[in-house]
Length: 622
Image (tube, rainbow, N blue to C red):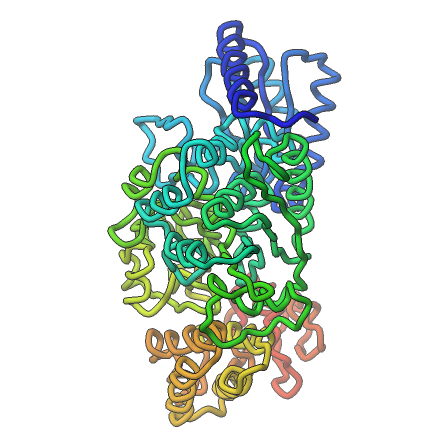
């Protein structure tokens, strides 16, 4: 295929816009977009897609296009679809199984009547169109996710139509490398992988080094529990990351990009492979891009899913074929990285911002967010939350707005207890901190951190000692073992937490945990060990009373620590229905039908099955 010039790209955009005007005028070409990210496919989006195609064929509907896109963000309501009828606002539908799909085709597509039972509000402003409904209170503002759920990631023309590769064209023909770096400086973009280092500064370090070979690496080794922002971005909009890497290469003088992505992301890998091949066919990567003298190309490297390889130097070692273990810094990778050459490593979310910053200007981006944290942040909102999913909000949005306005509050009418930000590197924040603005500095000030963007919400039924154990166990398993503070410290702190959870803890254990945690922060080689104590220390500080109950009273108020829980049956409430006895996996519940039952404590494994099935609240947890 012939190399696409800047004129060719502009023609693609102009032709598309002219076609849209014509279709709106003639009221033709209804569109149905089906979200087919990993979450959608897992919920049955493939079947929904097939049902829609079958209904259209059987009903002989001609003026309709059905296509797929990435995740639309409403992960709790998958499968999700959009119906776009010219001249009308687009309609977003959720929980669209085959039956709902048939109903939407019949009522909405054929007769123009929306199916309200499956409708959802438009969640965010489209920053490429700046479209707003004055009657809708937008909490989300999508920059990184601007194309996710909008374009077909396997069709490069759909990306080009939405200003795709316009930023690369601009830097190649209108800007010098210094101009690009200066625009990034004006924007105030900081790394979204967790550290929050200024992107322009990292780039300037590498640019200043004279070397015949430099590298741009995309860190797609997303490993935080509950985090899937980068995966979804690559599944829904791979070209934005590829374009950004080429821009970064132009800025620092690199000609090779490497995407380091964990092998557990097969769909994202597939989308990347297709995007790279299509862009090469258009001459957007390779030699003399768009007729310029700039050369840039890619390769994909698969990681084995080691959390520690999210750390820059460990990632580099993995690419070089060694075991993924961090090395002391300096020198930093920007000066001396892959194969000893200057190397820029940015994560997926950081890169996805860059084309928009170039197109709209750094000053435009800097207007969003707070004084020291510019732009937006993507979060994977999970846990005990009604509306779990992928969200993108301006920096400075409060936790309360995210949990209760966007997230819809706590599931099943339970009470909010805490929210964990920053994954295994962050801390738990209680109700007292719900009005904390989400930005790099504010979260650190209250004992947590931004991290890559995992946000797990907890309710009254969660045990905070158990939560702390979960994160420590993760760090124990993911520690590379190179440095003693992390290798030994994580294991020892976990053992002390386990001791507390089974009722054998004492007050001295808390001091030991604190001392070891502080030592790990100072002496560990990389960020994994330095931040691993954070969740534990924040739990002890924020939920001291609950932790002390485990130690002094041998009690777990949430009933999660089995060794501290006893199940008994209330004589006055038990009617002898025998359901609990039939569900008990170890047959430790005795009693005749219509007679009060008794739990044999010597054989009870405290699984909670009896408590879950009793309809009369006769099983008591104490």
